[in-house]
Length: 501
Ligand SMILES: [Zn+2]
Image (cartoon, rainbow, N blue to C red; front, side):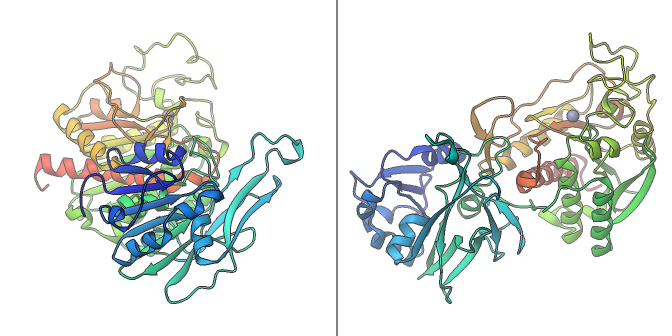
């Protein structure tokens, strides 16, 4: 049964956007079959590991042989089915609920299992489509979601996610023989685009079944201000005795800048930071998640992490984090303020006045935040420094470092991110996998955090741009997952390169 092309998409037509999206997510793995003109009997299905059904037109329902689909599951197959055909074939009450634009339809997670990985019981994520071209304006901007109403759960049938509109099942699992059918509403959410609240996670649960999409990612229910985030850091540290917080000094608006610390300070240091541009906020959650991952399993992926020292500053710019600004509270772009070729760095505009986009500050390291970070680098001389930014997909190198090690980290990161998440390319319209395929050459020396570290001898300092700056928490599973993977790739390659430190 195992072959490269192991996913079969059954639909009443060429496969539509779901087909196109699956081809991007799982290149070479998807066979599309049009049930209106081709046979989908048991013999055909048995050649695949996963069967996905997506019937659009009710008139075509009878052309999908659901008996064969169920038999496929019975013999150990994994089926992902849109709600419509599942409900009709099981004699259940199918519903498509419209709401005017007051409530955003969401799905509340009811069970934590391999399908819902990334979410906890009770988490609610937005899940809906939108009417965009209604002839009557009363219906424009309406949102809708599909559910199965009055689902009777049994030993074999469980609701995985229910609607916040009416309690109907938006995603359910039926155990059938040696396999299962997971029915979910793939028809309401549109193609995931950059900031789409209703569809960002459209393929996440399907991905968990087909390709273990979520490995380390975690949903956080709320976008917190800095004080709230610090509380969350303290709460997390309370749960893990190996995790402790350190007050690294005051920010320019007088707040304590806390780091998360794991491991042995006498061992080589990995320094990871985020949100130096305050509005690039999501990666702070990724780094908090990393600390949790390291403490839950110190031997994660066999990397004996207690042999290292992790210093993690999730919010390098508390003022900007709170006010959703790039600059710190004094209008300085902190990542143009480091004491590395500060005098020699010339942009033609947007650098000289406070609140200019790239305002460099009055002099090198004029800002308290900059001095806090420089102080950490001076004291610990890290083996690796990663500065997490948003929003694009690229790994940027400083002016020097260990090129071989950086290339090895990049290759590992690329590998890890393959076939995991679908999104819209930042600043462009095309759909793509979440990836870190692009990498820069060594750049000229700049007053950047990573350049300061490279100048002080860090062999593996680099900057990550990944998708983010969203206006809410809807992409945090994907974002936190990506951050943790990148950090673990760096740890692994540093350990391989240096032997066991
Ligand atoms: Zn940035």
